[in-house]
Length: 236
Image (cartoon, rainbow, N blue to C red; front, top):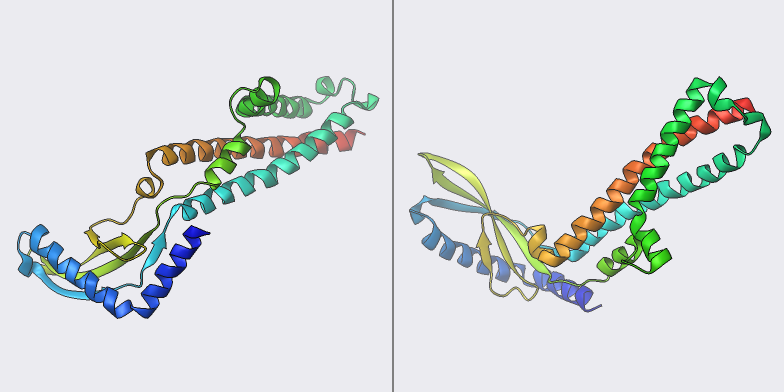
């Protein structure tokens, strides 16, 4: 709630005091030019200052949420198909099918391999469920989604500068806190690591990578499961 309030406050402030903030950005940039340009006269013109954006951990959390939603969706389909396959394989009509149908033999082999990989990928969930060791991916995801971090205000500054005897357009970034204090000029914008912090970045990378690996595996299971079930349905 506090983060939302800060973002809203910054947004309202930017709308109501846009010209004032723009003057501050111009002043900060000219100061930057005087200390960072070899020749301050290379700055020919501040062409435009874009409207500012708020940058926070929420953008990263939204990305992770989208990844998890994709996994949950395909995982549900895979589970339902696995139940159908397991139930169908009990049918007496399918006895010896792996011997008389090479396509089924290949498909069920690949399906079983993908199923074994699935067990490996979800081992952290199983360790927690069976031995109370570690933490399941779902809980680690929830922990990350509950994190709060610093919120930044960032806007782009488009300038025309003299470079190698020719004027060129260059973009810089003005970055400040939500109260629009201490404006810092940079040649690059806020990076993910800066928004998250080192520890949160590691957590995000690990959780995201695990979900992506599970998604890849689930897609393979979905593909092979369809083939297996189609052959089964033709045989019964």
